[in-house]
Length: 164
Image (spheres, rainbow, N blue to C red):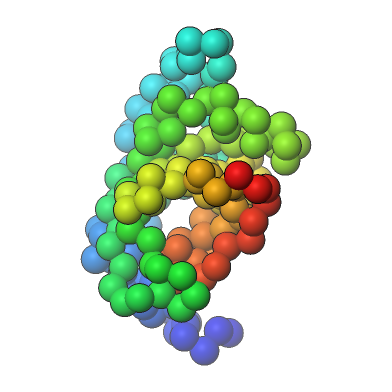
C-alpha cells in the first residue's frame, strides 16, 4: 500500500482532502447530469461535420467527478498543481481535435474538463486513460481518472505524447 494512503481512502490524503473540499465523496454518482452532458455532446456537430463520441468510461467519470471545481493548495511537486473544472462541455467545440487524438491513439476520446488557469483541455479515452491537450502538445496524465486527478492535484509532470 502507498505510504500516504490508509485502508479507508481511495486517494492519498492530500488528494482526498482536495477532492472532498471540491464536493466529491466516495459513492458520488450523478448519472442524470452525466446523461445531460452525453446528450449535449452527441447532439453537437462542428461546422465541418465532426462529432463527439460518448462511451461508458467517460459517462462514469462525469457521473462521479463531473461539475467539481478543484482548487489544490500548495505549489505542486514538479509543476504547478492544476485548478480544474470537471465539465465536459469545455470541449464541446473541440470534436475535431479530440477525434484526431483518438485516431492517433487508436481509440475514442471524449472531453472531461479543463485546467481553468491555463485553458488546457482534459480528455478521457474509451479505456479510461486521461490526457491533457494544450498549445504545447498532448499529454498523458494516467491510466485512469484516479491517477490523473492525483497527478493534476499534486503537480506531477505528465508524459508528452506529441509536440505542439
